[in-house]
Length: 386
Ligand code: UDP
Image 1: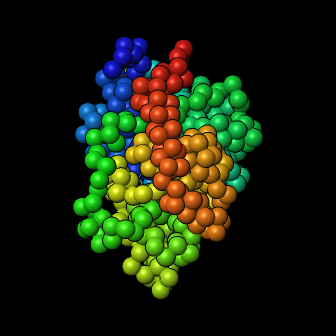
Image 2: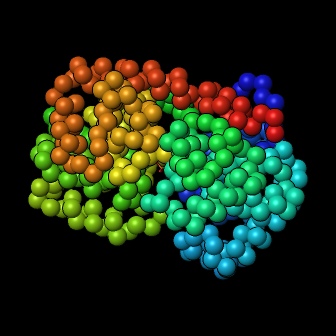
Image 3: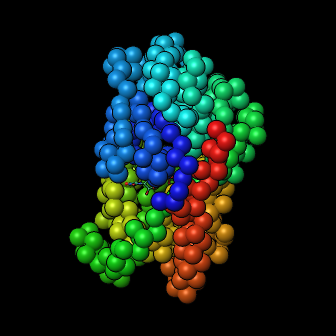
């Protein structure tokens, strides 16, 4: 660790599941662990992951019934949930007296932090990991979040230009914005052996069959169905589906399972559920697809594929287009087009030199641009002067 100015940060996270935003938090919480603390507003695996990194973690206790109301409400504005958010805000305000700033890692966490600020708590930095669009956020939710940000956030960290643009388009004050990318430790990927024959054997995938991986939580907008449809046209290709339905969506998971049972795919879809060992699983694949149906705010999986030295095909737009230069560090394809996705998969599988060129260029870029030290420097710049 370099000499940091050891800001005392109270990290606040509403969710404790391991989505991309929470995985990103692990790195910053670790970097500031000597002087900081994470406050979780719900319990989950994030707690043990943080503790294993030596980070101080506290769980704000909450009356179960009212917290369930916050979780169940799709918006932030239900009266029951407002009462509970207010109560949490009061607790965070009290707690934040020992810190220089509150870092809110998700939208509900930010609302709680904003209330804390209003009640005399420490300055608030909102780490925005999402593109604020109508698809994902209701107009009311978006308005509340952006209005609160303009009123009481000292800074808003964004993970890509796409996230920044959407914040401004929703009425956010551009002067608050600072870019802080997600970080990755390339050595974790380098340490994993390239030959993962054992894993393929375990899954009974014949040696001569290409394996295409998709590493995303199971959610309609992550586009697993697009890859399954593309694979129907590629009879040799096997698919590795890694990830779970983190935030509901059991129905969609069921639909995918039914698709995978069809004759045109039977025996070729390998469903692994959630795994922590992403590098080894990626290295068992020949190619990695990230075919979200809407623009990704960042797209961690794409950088991970690049560090695993596997060619990546991803949907054009959003943060993905800031990570992949088409045909230089990966392939970009339009959303929701199984035909073009199938073609792109063929292009890569049929031309090894092309694939090698892509992976070599992508690895170099990912290793420097998204290293833990460079994103920590971005983070530090973003909170300078607070
Ligand atoms: N991931 C994981 N295990 C899984 C599936 C996904 O650890 O079974 C990780 C994946 O490696 C990536 C993150 O979850 O680091 C997902 O981040 P991304 O930005 O791709 O999407 P998000 O979930 O944030 O929308």
